[in-house]
Length: 321
Ligand SMILES: Cc1cc2nc3c(=O)[nH]c(=O)nc-3n(C[C@H](O)[C@H](O)[C@H](O)COP(=O)(O)OP(=O)(O)OC[C@H]3O[C@@H](n4cnc5c(N)ncnc54)[C@H](O)[C@@H]3O)c2cc1C
Image (cartoon, rainbow, N blue to C red; front, side):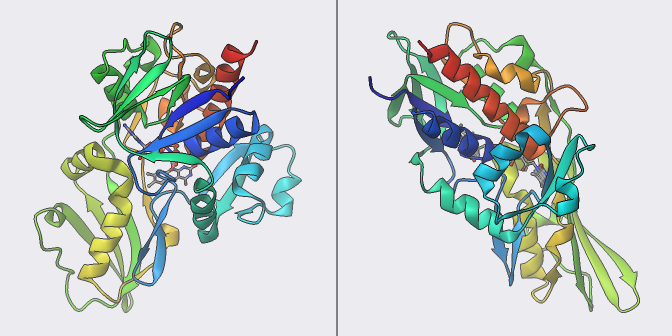
């Protein structure tokens, strides 16, 4: 029998982890991502002389997730101190990524089948498979099963556009309208940095004087945040870093402090539900951190990984026998 063909929409951490799980289970996954580089929000970009993470610095994992984390990231790139490993009383452990973690993810992302394209439409076929339409009038790819991993609002929007009834648990999407923050670069500033064009005029720069140093932080307005979310929320932080760097060329960006918060979350899909098909009659699942979960559950990378494992279990059990 030929291997189960699975289309994974999105090659962020959840899509990559799922592709790894499925390959090891004998299925044949293909990642379809609109971005040229895989990794989604787990990425870094060179800015000046530093590599600035666009998002993640560290994350918490539950003990039962450690094997998945080790297999995806490999021991050499995820640092966990001995005292943390031995801390069996804790519910979760804190892991920290180094810059080499981003390089590692780039490397392993090249080992999977992938298609570069924006999925604009999802449709069941008469033979019970799922067709994915790329770009507006682009090619259509058909798979035995599909897993959607875009962040919550984008996932809901894709399903709405595709006229697929949205399950109740995905209905409520809340934008948290969060500000963007980047900092702190240190430099002796002769003047306020001038952020010239229209776009960056919406970025406010705050200075905090400390002896002869200046701490620099930039906050984007709500309007900018919302607009960027519609384009691609993930690029914002590195864009801000690039803009600051070009305005203040010798700025040393201390990327340890670089931070931006999530914009949006689809609240009503608990992580444990990811093992269920989005519609009982369709071979279509969802995973990723944007699926939300009850308050107090894991978030971020940890949720991305646990929802990917749940989607794999649901999908494989639906096709077993
Ligand atoms: C600034 C910031 C800081 C963060 N800090 C932390 C942290 O410290 N710790 C932590 O655990 N987490 C953190 N996170 C969250 C973490 O980055 C995410 O949880 C994780 O990377 C999400 O992975 P994902 O695979 O679910 O989604 P994503 O990484 O968003 O992947 C989704 C992919 O789908 C693709 N895609 C979307 N729509 C389509 C479409 N229609 N067609 C084709 N492709 C599509 C996108 O290009 C993307 O590659 C942070 C996030 C941000 C933004």
